[in-house]
Length: 412
Image (tube, rainbow, N blue to C red; front, side, top):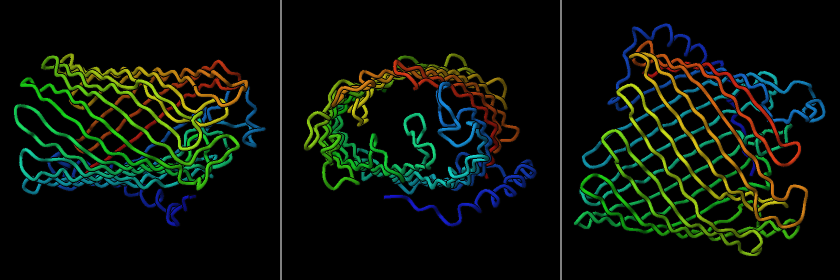
């Protein structure tokens, strides 16, 4: 169902800009935010320039696709955020909510205001019986990496709700269980990644070692539906429902005092209600390592494999293999440098008919560098450069994008 845009959204950026300017001027004299404050207010402003907003191939004609020869844009982002965290006896309540206003200088039909939040109740009945009740909501523009209707704004709203519990039996053995609902809604039709709701329940055992390491075995079963398809669509084999089962092994291992390994490996199976041609299964997982090299340098690295539904004539899903490394150097008490290299490969699988795009494989390389400066304890100013490049074995899918960003954030 299409999302209606809030009537006040065009007034958000002008209203917040003076407040941010005033906050920057007064930052040295204002009371600084403390990590243990129950309530914090954040105001931020960002300016981004993207030289290939629509991720067009060098062989594409922007005039024919966009109605203009220009394919770059400057985006102004204004943020107003509220954070709350409070302990009450064994209970803890958390809220992180924000209004994020996006204004495009040239392609202003893409303007929108995102209403995002993350809420959590960290509950406990006894020290041995505890868990979480969480809900998150995010709104974001569908990336033109995958969505190719360049003349329409398409906002995706993702909502996730989860209740889980952990009961310590004794002898380091824990029973863990949970139930989740995930919802995804696009403001415009997006057949390849259609609107969906997925409900699941999971149950497992976790063993905690004296070193702090843990290992868990979890079984998850769920069912989903494509919410904008009351009936399956025979032309194209677009189903209206599916079942999914996962068996997962999780590990958390502090290798040394400065190094920690976290990961999961699982087998996933998705079966559709009517069209088995869309079914898929396989091994998925991710492993990450965090290494505090020195007191001022840290390296995070991860590898992952995921299977994601992507329904077209030439694919039912894609396999995404990814490697990320992200070093951080605290240059001084007030400055820091972040680097990031992200390499991923997508193999599009499960074709339902022969086409020229069958066996499509894309490789995306992303590199970025960011310099952060905290002139005051409640103020963060940063600047970054990013380069993203996709190559494909199919014509017309290659692109390159360069982006520069400057941002400032004040927390009260």
